[in-house]
Image 1 (cartoon, rainbow, N blue to C red):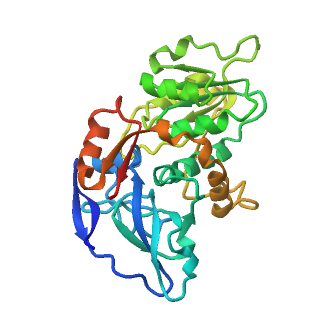
Image 2 (spheres, helix red, strand yellow; image 1 turned 30 degrees about the horizontal axis):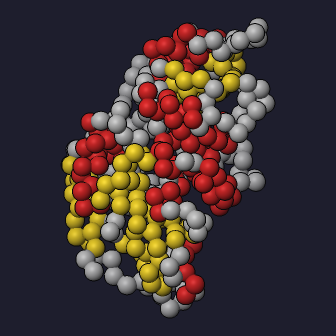
Image 3 (cartoon, helix red, strand yellow; image 1 turned 180 degrees about the vertical axis):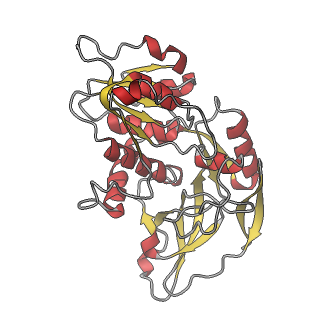
Length: 337
């Protein structure tokens, strides 16, 4: 079998190249990829050359070695079926559906402890959304929503929509989602948002209701646009908190920290899935967080989030679509024959 892998080779250029995988070592699995999800946030930064070239690809993932300079293999959302096992691996792994944080390619080798066994009823496409659900789980853990809070989520991409679905289970006073794209606002409403609006119309949203205390208690910034931080500062109240799950890469915007931010004691904290918050590390580790994400993956309507399924050999079309038609695409999946 001839294997192939996806390479980012230059700005706005990806290529499918022949790759050599080989048989599994004694302690490895050989996995045939069925589906891999494209991250419209991080991978588009790589595609557009908007990442710091000397930044490690991901220090938490062994499969992503090196830095983010071209050419590089990237991606971290592959699901597939185990086809072979090494001499030291239990044969019961064969034909099991698994997920792994590996780049886009037709087959890959991995040790059993570096893959996640998927529930039998989870489809390969749904399984490839696991990183989004895990990231959303991490963001909600960092946000620590409380009873009766008013919450605003900026950005209804895949991560934002997964966050909305998780937050909808909390007894909040209100959950408002802000996104310029109508299709995404409609999905957010279906996943549990009480109200949706555009950035331009956000000022007209009444967050206080009958309360004498104005502003949102919590804002979650997932739009990928640095300017949204100003909107988040503008919408939260005194002593509120803003959790930033976006990675902006090299994008920069002037942020007004000289007004309400300073006097209203607003907290801004980053949420990044590679690590667990220091406040939680005594009880939470990555395994527990992954178990929490697995318990909730089937609550995420994959069929509604996945707007495009593109054959792996036509991968350049997928990135062109995400780059040029953000209104049309939510989640794009690469499928492997």
